[in-house]
Image 1 (cartoon, each protein chain N blue to C red):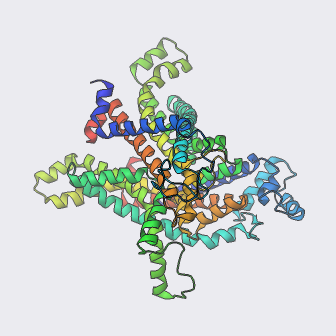
Image 2 (cartoon, rainbow over the protein chains, first blue to last red; image 1 turned 30 degrees about the vertical axis):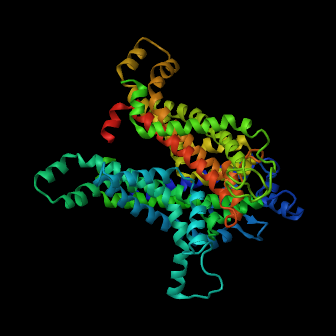
Image 3 (cartoon, chains in turn purple, blue; image 1 turned 180 degrees about the vertical axis):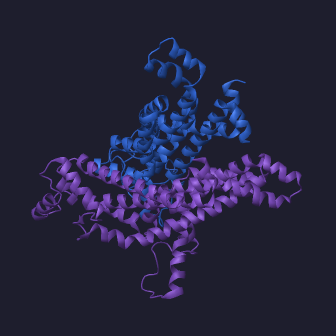
Length: 325
Length: 278
């Protein structure tokens, strides 16, 4: 019952955030230099007069601003994200086509960075001060400072162009006609480079956080008690320290989901991954603002949903939260 | 222990400071070493690094000197990093200070507003802002500032919240100092240390953000930037890796140096914290 009410509250909050983002989109279009209709239609001169007239009518551009906002919001909440004049298709269709690839990429990157980050953080904390700790900490510091798109390009040169281990670009081997498991495997090998390069920055972040959390909890009273009782050291690390240290890292990871979605624009651009990030890059090149704002809205919605899931999972996993709030 | 001694005890911070000074030096000396515009074609294209005297980082697809671009790029990166951080502070500090000092409804409203901006995917928002306002120095600075102020507001709010119940602040209230005066002369000066640490890290992430924007073609079209160079070299990766490689190294070193300096500042300004952090 409590959980249901909690989820309900979070859902309402999420919807309010989405309405606010749609409102932001609305004012961004009007902040652009030039007539909103031609801004929405894309590159100046690309659209014909008939299409501009349709746009004006559809968005009520001759009516007062608050009415325009109302029309825009009701459109977006019924998932009408506008029409791409360039591609001749509704924006929502374009995005729906590309969304699965992005979900696969960001999901893989998220799991990869969280698992590897936690493992490296635990290893570093266990050997604090030794050379393996220094190696992990330095590595984390380095990857934290490298531009994501540059790591992507360099790994592309090394692992696919020079060594030939992994495919260079794309989602799957075109024209190979694989099906079933063979196809999954093919997509999997195409996924390795984009997912790891997208995940490395976050791996570095989580490893640093996990290490710090582990070291902090190592000094807690309950750890001393366990040690005094003669609990085996490996068990102390696993059950007493790591379990408690992982909670703040998971919370941060949930909040960081938005940054992974943003980073996907760069990774997908470099690896030609057919997701919404690549769609955003193409829209940029064509000045297709309806698509641009549509992708922005959908990726924000993804983040809101992701934060909601993290909140719920976290609350189920750690009953103490309820008391804390 | 003096401030500098505490800072210098952290070896990484010293290394970072040295790298950072070199980058600043490169930015200052760029017009002396390379007086001609970095956009100008100077010799034949696709010249590999070290192949010809005077062009030790090679040339790009249009015969432009990569070394000249890297040095001139340092000016843009540092400029945008600094200005956008200052702009983000100008947004974040007042919001955080008001929220923390007044509490209650004002705090609630301002923090909802801050959370909202933290929920939005930062990079996607920056792209949308720059694309719609057209790429220029101003739109890039604005976009970076808009996506990076929320952590500042939260930090300042937390600090102010704990400071305002201190006795010296209460004393200032009792002797009848005006609220703005209390905020500016009693409370904010004591938040400078954590803000400085955060600002140095923000310059680093602003540089990363700017490079990512110009990599996507959203840089100021009149400025040679590291991100633009990497983006331009991307299509010729097999033939000429160096075009994209060296600007990336420049970004990496600058960001690394700023992160190290930030950690050093943290140790020097919060001596108590650094001891338990190990």
